[in-house]
Amino acid sequence: MLRYRMLMFKLNRLVGKNRLTGAEEISLAGQFAEMITSQEEVDRIIADLVDHENPQVRRIGLAAIRRSHRFGGQTLMQALLRRLADVEGWLRHDAVWIAQEGQLDGAELRAALRRVAGNVRLPQDAVRARDNPADGLLHAAVRARHVLDALIKKSAAAHNAALAAGGALAGANDGKPYAQGSIGQIHSAHRQLQRKMAARKLRSSTKLKFRKVEPRYAENDNRRFLL
Image (tube, rainbow, N blue to C red):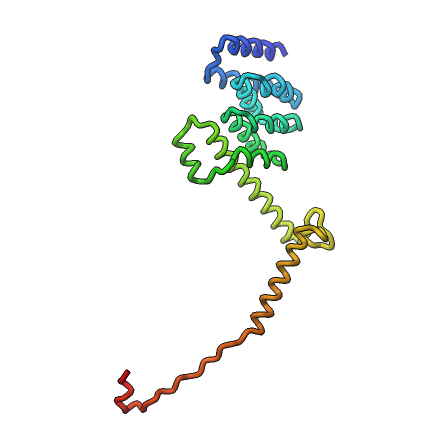
């Protein structure tokens, strides 16, 4: 606790004198990360650093949590959602980075990632981000797009695995992949009906028959060469 207070005193002094450099940000983040051994300490970092009014201090807090590899607790998720809406691009980027390394997921997180990603396109914007290393908002959008795509791919794989295992998903009835009366079940029934109608039309459609065209002239008749 004494070491933590000393670090906070040093940090506040540097912030007050406006002398907090990038190198000191990295150093302080590492020192705070070494002291994080429980979820309670993560909560303290969130309260003291991640929600600080100074953006450099907020980034130190995010970096410390990421380097500590402690990604549990509802407090962290709510803090990440706040930082994903931060005006500073690099703070958004670091929040996405934590979600990526912690393999975090959830409806609110995905919605926030979509807002951060915006209309970014891969791989074009990834190349543009590499050519613009100082554009924090662009880097945040590109990383958010990567993370969101990975989460969607993971959900699709789980969905397909459940279908392959017998078609039973959470909330399903009668062993069907969708709950009875749900939008998914209605659309599934509509697709099955369309397939049946298409198959019926194919079976009843007119089948073309071709007959062999007999030559008009005998083989020794030179008129067969005339047009």
